[in-house]
Structure formats: C-alpha cells, structure tokens
Image (cartoon, rainbow, N blue to C red):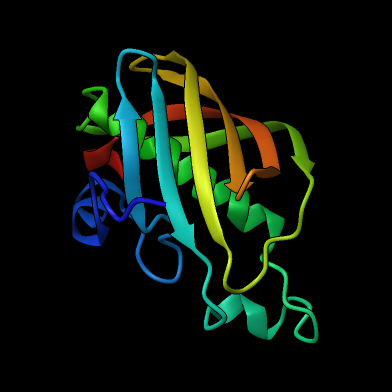
Length: 150
C-alpha cells in the first residue's frame, strides 16, 4: 500500500458538504477522468460512533454507511468531472450485495466507475474492497442539485 494520495481530508472537505461523523472518505488515491473512475480510502476506526450500538459485542460497520462512503467517492469524481457548482445526491441503490463484514481496523478501498454522468444526474457501479476481497458492491444512481439550492 502506497502512502501517496491525491486528496486528503482538507481537500475532500472543500468538495463534499459532509462533516464528521458523516464524512466517510479519508483520502483519494486515484482519479481517471477519461474512464470515469475513482479510488478512495476509508480507514475504519474502532472509535467510530456507530460501533457503540451496531452489534457492540462484535462491531460491524453498517452496510448503509459503506454504501454512503461509495456514494461520497462517486461525488468527488463527479466534482472533478467539472460539475463543481453542483452536488450529486443519491437517488437509488440497486443490486447491492454485502459479501464481507467490515470491522474496526479495516481499510476500505472505495472504487466507483461512472456509467453515465451528466448535468442532470447519472449512474455508477461501485465496490468497497478489503485487501483482495469485495466487501460490498452496488449500482448507485444520483441526481445533480445546484449547490446554492441546498
């Protein structure tokens, strides 16, 4: 694993409207604007507030938060594609599969690939990977909303 990255927390906070505890992307590792792909990282800490109540005896990261982390990675990609005056808002999650539990100490690699991206919205395929195993995969649809209308 390389320690290099494109964006850290400060740059991500300038792109996404989310803040702790709902900012779920720690770093952006790579962006390929030609192929509409992004790889981001979420380091899952045992101090995350949801672990206090989500299976506290055997803490597991909630699947819906993994989907949100994937959507946020996709939102960064959309921003970098030139839609910096808009925000991608999640509309639909389809074909979601939860294949491996995500535990404290895990490092999630968030892969999103734009299938269709326009000024009105789009669709992405996404997967969260632990090591060489897919933990979660889904298709995410989104609408584009003007930032000044939020």
